[in-house]
Amino acid sequence: MFLEKFILPTAQQEENVIHGAYKNPFIENAYPFGVFAEKQLTELDFTNITIIYGGNGSGKSTLLNLISQTLHLKRDAPFNNSELFDLYVKQCKYRMSFNDFGEVQNLPDGSSYICSDDVFEYMLSVRDNNEFVENKKHNVSQDWLEKRYGESIRFNSMEDYEDVKTQLLARRKSVSLKKYLNKAVENKIRLKSNGETALKFFKTKLKDDTLYCLDEPENSLSPKLQMELAQDIQNLAKYCGCQFIIATHSPFLLAINNAKIYDLDSNPVEIKKWWELENCRIYFEFFEQNKRYFQS
Image (tube, rainbow, N blue to C red; front, side, top):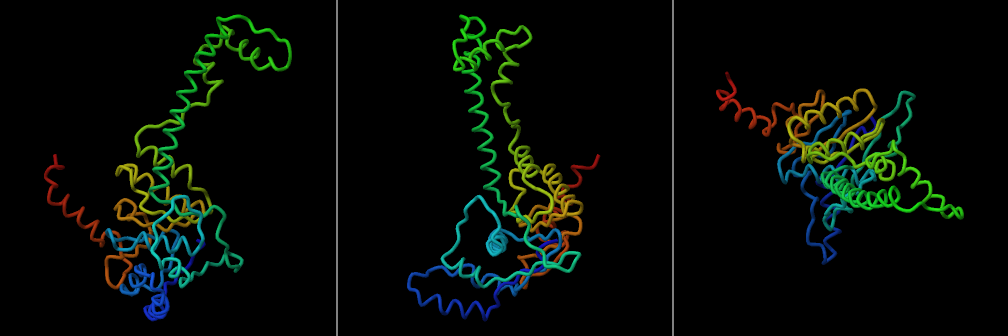
């Protein structure tokens, strides 16, 4: 574990900052000032897997953004912050944990914030890459026909080397068009459903001994794939030295073994078990009312 504690400004500290900020006549939106102090949330203590839970508008994504900005985590997707967001970040503090030698740990290289926009961007880039490969394959196919059945290319100088080389390849009996294409063009990235592509993104992106802030990683994932991602996260935290701070309302991620869950829907904010959360209880009650359909 790398990050031990995150400290938010108290109500009094917020009031002092806001009093000074509002001397600026252009300030209209004080968010996120007042959000967490109102819920009496002044600090979070972390474990290897810490989950920030809450409904829409509860502030879970805002809190995750505050943590990632305060720690200067790498991020790709931009986010819409308020006029006073950076001022609020300056009031936040954090404490890193100690290693086995009693030394304060540094934030690992590669630690990052990942949100659904990053996953969607990856899916779009895969599709763009595959479209490029398809277009390139068409051109290479034409080239194969010309070099296999057209006139022989004469080697007059080193400038002809590559053309002669590819013609010899095209004319080999053992080299079919498919083999020629595979040698000349990179293979397409396998793309199935959005969910499978999204899961592949996480399997590729998440590395050992790193801290990650994940904002609703369940987006685009079916329940089955959410369970697989939850197992991957659990394994990375348990065996590979990773630490996760996750904003989610997915019951499959909330149910990760030994995850510490902050319920932002409660006031004051409380630490709860996943089966105590409103979202999970709604699922339970729905299936309990309809269990006759599942009984043989």
